[in-house]
Image (cartoon, rainbow, N blue to C red; front, side, top):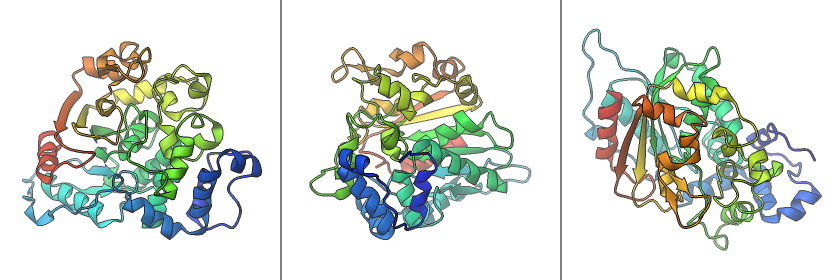
Length: 356
């Protein structure tokens, strides 16, 4: 069966048609089991994904404790788009509380744009709708919201930053799509991940499926066409491999793959301000320095780390990171904690500093 980018949309409804053909099932048995579960029991899979300890915002913000900003006559504040992480959904109470607190703090319209029409579909699509396709759905959600028509600020949590970054690079150069003025990435998977930690395949069917394909099997058309996490899996020992350069979506986004597009640089340059937030104790993103554009050294891929300005994509400015640095657009923040486990006070402080 030839796999296309449109096929993940099959997961939007229950289908009795097997997702994998015989050859794919032979090569990826556990991953195909996961796809079968998505096809036959969406609700169960969505609940399993939300329950993963590293996946979602599991607590609600105290919206009542947020000091409301009342705009003076003639004053305005750009609307804000929030993008959730893997395992989460715009329809969950935790994300709703984050959006409400953001709106109240900044004194502007705020919204979370899902990639699925329900909690179940939005959660599953964070895994089984690939990164490029997810950006396309996200972009149509932005375009359809009249409150965002004149531009907006945005911040993401974990994987949600890939949606915003992808939108900036692909849709800023297209007519009819509003621009992101300030982008704040909190624990973003910006430089990809070289491992998928804290996910025991013996304990969870989802982890078994991910472990099977996030390795030597990650860089092929079938897996890259489905799995969001495979799209930003960046094995530091394989960045010169033909399969990585040909099939990896993150390789194309960094303009280090076979598909180099100058429009990605142009789109990146249209954002006025970037804020990169690092979780100093993060064990979910490896290396955690990738949240602020660091990477492992390809010549010593599992021991030596490169700062953002020592990487090839900075030195050769493959997608616009160095130019943005030279223009003073980068801002660097951190918090002492595990993946997206910042405090409410820290989030409100960043919003006040960069969005007000």
